[in-house]
Amino acid sequence: MSFNINRFNPQSAAEKAVSVVGFGYDLCNDLRLSSCKPGPSGSKLIDIDFTRSRDLVLPAGVVVPNVPTSINCDKGERTRFRSDVISFNQMSELFNQQLSLSGKIPSGFFNTMFGLKEDG
Image (tube, rainbow, N blue to C red; front, top):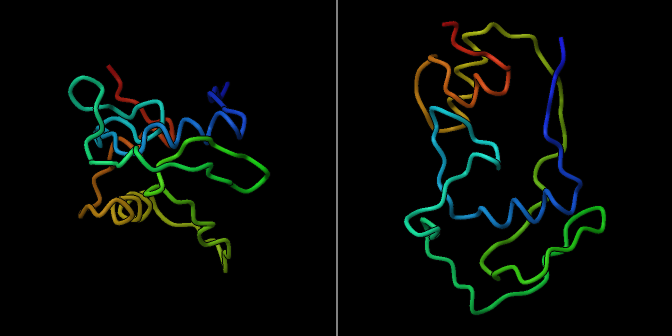
């Protein structure tokens, strides 16, 4: 069984991530960067002030030029205290909670993350 993932180098991934800030996504499909969708005429779905920009410096020496000042980078949480094995329903519910959704029905994001596809 082969597992094919389109991987970016850190610079390309950072540039792509910044470029899709403000785009939408189809929760029933996928939340990956490649699936982000612009609004009408390629516009952002949220208002971003592009008149003030700066170079955004990220970990590992990655620099994304001309990033609006309203877009920031936070190093986030890095501490994992433990990892438990949980059931399919619990995992689906956890994914949904992270997306501010209720219920245990797997989202498109969940299905994509684990390579689950509809038969037929």
